[in-house]
Image (cartoon, rainbow, N blue to C red):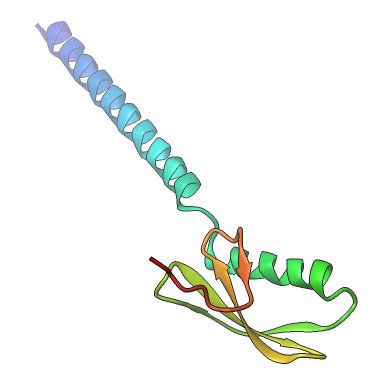
Length: 108
């Protein structure tokens, strides 16, 4: 009889470990998928935008970020100080793919 009880305990603990392993794997998949779907962070977008401006638009000139803010239209507003132009507002999409020198307006 004791052998039977020990065998049941072992089988129960194996089921628990299997269930725990499956739940852990599901959690990890969701965590990785969420990080992949959410896209770049605000800091990454701002940094990449500043690098793009520095390297492609204002070669060799100082470009300084004064501030960055989220707008209500899925964009970031960057207040940028440039040597020749002074302080400008630039608008960058949340995914960092597009930079606008004026606030885009919706038409239609």
